[in-house]
Amino acid sequence: MHFFSFLAAFLLARRLRSLLKESYLYPKWNNLLNVSSWIILILFFVAGSFFEEVTSGFIGSMLLLGMLVYLDKEPDFKIYRPLIEANYPLLAVGLLRSLVQAIAPEFYENWDEYFEFALVGAFIWIFARWANSKKQLQELRIAEDRKAELEVLVAERTTELTQQQETLQATIKELQAMQAQLVQQEKLASLGELTAGIAHEIQNPLNFVNNFSELSTELLDELKAGPWQTLQESEKEYAADIMQDLTKNLQKISFHGKRAESIVKGMLQHSRASTGQKELTDLNALADEYLRLSYHGLRAKDNTFNAKLETSFDVNLPRLEVVPQDIGRVLLNLFNNAFYAVQQKKAARRHDDSYQPLVRASTACLGDTLELRIRDNGCGIPESIRHKILQPFFTTKPTGQGTGLGLSLSYDIITKGHHGEMLIESEDGEFSEFIIRLPVKASNT
Amino acid sequence: MKILVVDDEADVQPLFEQRFRKEIRSGALTFNYALSGEEALAYLTEHHSEVVLILSDINMPGMSGLSLLQQIRQQYDTLPPFVMMITAYGDEENYTQAMQFGANGFLTKPLDFNDLKQKLKTLEV
Image (cartoon, rainbow over all chains, first blue to last red; front, side, top):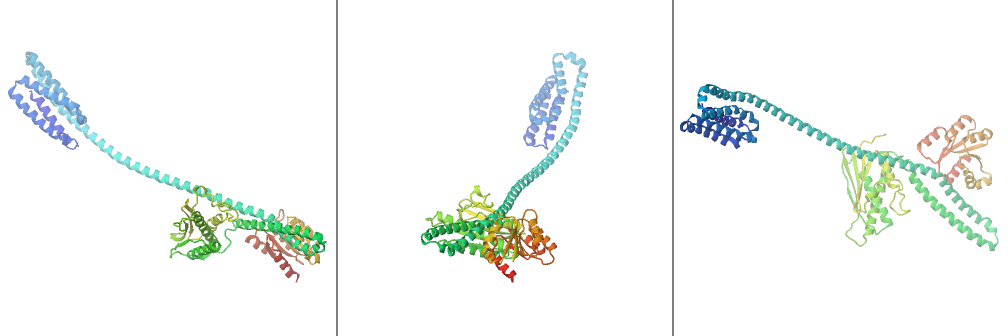
């Protein structure tokens, strides 16, 4: 009955080999298991023909023991451990039987049927366990399939969630940008209203100043034509000096009064962002006209000044319902600023001939909005003041050269008067670009 | 010709006196002043028949120039005085309303006195 151990070892090797067939481990173990199974078979015949029953039974048990210990330690066979462990009873019974056969042959003779019965039982036990573990393995495989399915599902959900998160983050960023823009718009709008309000308050007292200074000048003339003539010659000169000084002072009052008046007028335009009539206008022609107007206006003041003018107009630009005078004022403002910026830069680089002042106007149609860009390669707008330049009274020009109302008024005309937007792009020392976007379909609200 | 000037600014008085000093001296024009709409109406109840022209500011505390205009048009059907409105707010709304209430003219501040004198001349004729 020594063949049970050999047979068990042989079958175990074959079984493992066939189980591994679907696994990635197959190439690694295929040969070893195949060869060892045939070696076991050869060993069985050798042991059977050269040794007696006791020895060959002992060899068989040792072979099985060695094999089980080896497989038990191998991590690749971890999931097949029930298969391997099923051989332990047979191993134990085989070893005990061989031991008893060797030490107490007589006792064995008396009880050999029981030993053989146990041996057969242990052998059958192996197959019972195998059948059982096969079912377990199947369940395990089903569970693993399920697990794989779930993992795919989880991965899908994860990518879905990640995408959602990204969209949400983008939306939040957009909202924050919009909020900042709204705050800025609101600030500028209230500043515009404040400006107009202040203008109204100043206007009345200023009217008195101007009126009375004018009147006083007239009165002085009257004085000179009338009562002065009747003075004694000795006092005439003295009185004439005083009257001359008074006239000069009144001229100064008038001059500065008129200056204040023109500022107030500019301020008041904030409350009358759009009083003109909207009419279908060719923006290309308007931009071209004001570009030239601004350039020649500047040339008239400074005939050494030169700049390259560049236009890139979209010939298919549809005509737009706008107030041409208002948009013209915006364009004039922006072109004047552009020329001023290149002029400043040119003045700063008097000895550098490589700098060529350039002012560029372009239009484009972007679906339901028209875009107008005015770009100069002048001194640029420093980042630190970029948020201030649309506020009323902010100016970088020397006192008397600019009121600081041009851009704030332009902004009002574009946003309030025409429901458009005005954006600024600039790099300090390199360029400035003003972008005006106007809706093609003008709303009347 | 008697003119009533209605403005809450007291300095309007010396301004008109000086601007029209020749006309006042010659007796061609006579000016009276009221500092509010209420004061103007009170003056009119006594001197209605004398006043030929009323120059009124629109923005005044209390009764506004526009409601003064309405009152005048309601109360003085016979021998209606000329009424011209003056305002710093040269906006369309004020203008259309003033015209709707029956104003004879609309002037914006700062007043152009030469223009005003021209208008007065056409009235005298």
